[in-house]
Length: 310
Image (cartoon, rainbow, N blue to C red):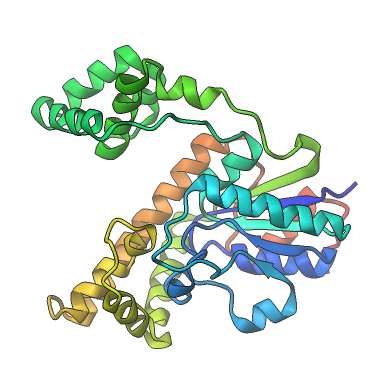
């Protein structure tokens, strides 16, 4: 029996879009965005959003529907995704959720924790204490309040360490305890998932080639238009990988080859973080380890015998 909802997660440039289009062709499913940057219409090139030709081949939802000035949270995306999935279900259709934002998938399959707001003063105090103590001592203190978070948060992740301590300081309940009190949005029997984890060197080479192609496709004009809006740099769209690097070139601070190289490096780093996140939070999801589209599809069919390899 085929699921009603297919989930395809993977790092940037791993082949998710091609796999989703192939699956849509085989099942008649509609594609739903689960990538935090492909939400924004201002980042069509930089986020590698589906092309007009790809959208014409099968219905796409939640791609390029949000203005860069409107920063969406995980919760807001979940509400929109649930609405779209409901509409597809009422048409007796199948859906393919595709993207590289692990928290989006977790919000659907595990649930979204209701974290109480942290007062600005509490976060400011936590930030000052981190800077005064240094990471090792701050980690040791966090381990006493939230050992799960301290173990999970990678070395050097200042922002998440401060957040974990701030939540405990503000609420008296650890961030990990808050996150454990969740209910999945999707029924377990309604979905089937796969995570793409191709060889690292092949993935990095594809990341580099994609960034170079973006320059030829007009990414500098896209970033220039975004800069002209003078938006809050804290907005999610303004923190997209590549915006800062190409903006520095447009301001005359770096030459284009250096900006491109920096954007490529940041993209490789981002792909590594996505892969690490999936290994930790999606450890039980079946893996596709090929990067070639045909080989990926054969692996996918082997995991889902109801499909055909043609």
